[in-house]
Image 1 (tube, rainbow, N blue to C red):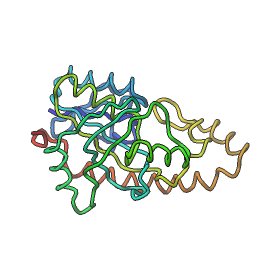
Image 2: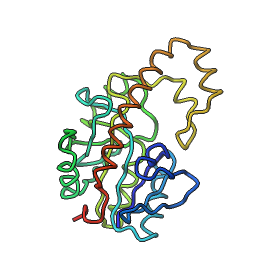
Image 3: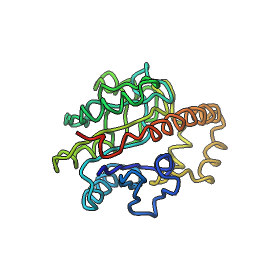
Image 4: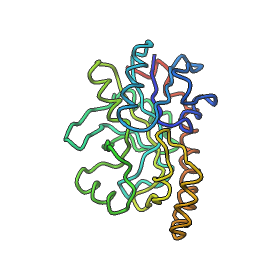
Length: 235
């Protein structure tokens, strides 16, 4: 039984349209378990541990990521072969599981190798992304997958990360967006509007981010329809 951790309800709804942060664990039609954790490593670790306690025997991290490799554009599907932390820790994903999913998604040309970097904070600027790419060689960055990978490693169960690029290496996250996002990833309208009023130049980047998000959502939907989280996906 696969346990799937999504930081955001908007990511999880591609797997279960009723998913929300208020539902502790949802059971999908194929028997997989789904938990919306909220953003950050601590929340993701707690969700992964809850899924294992509920009977999951494999773990998956599913959702969006920021691009570090300029070759990955918005909507690109990334299936990392390893997840790394800033402290040098590197954990491998399940190769058979990853390759099976890559084959199911071959028409979308997913990248099924490379490093996903774990970060304690959102990486918003183009300069930050370039520096992390040079230093780590990671193709993308997120805030939750490493924590889920660590739980899987500690409990000796298979793990895979499924990430879709939303903001590419050359896309800056507008400060108004990062300031207005809460722990569950929801944008609070008042702080967002105030941020844009203070700095109207951010509007162009915000519109660009909206287009990126639509492309990423389409790819998440494609992955969800491929059925990669069925129990037979793990070996």
